[in-house]
Length: 150
Image 1 (tube, helix red, strand yellow):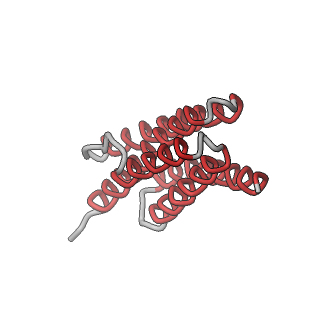
Image 2: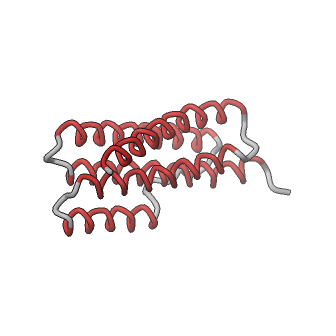
Image 3: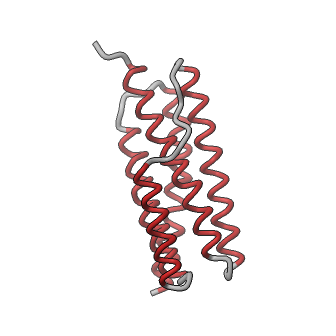
């Protein structure tokens, strides 16, 4: 029989990996957007928030006597590499970077939704719902930026 903990820890570690991906991805975006100080600062704030999310989730894994994920995912590393490559090729084109951030946030939102569909302890559900609300807000922000760039 599989216990709740056996299901929850892998799900939390997946979220931690995605948060680490977001942290590093937003840092990369900020560097590529150095010509737009306001947008670069926004990306740095989002990067810091994702680091906070990951730390919070890591603490929850420890409470469940698990080993928390420390790094991002391979997919995230590949995505950041793709975003960096596009930024180089397009000369740091703001529209391309915004589109990449929006696409990454779409994936992040989906992973939060999948996690919330699991049976989770109530306190953990509240933490993840709070983070999810902020992820949706960031996704909406980049979607709006993407539309206004068209």
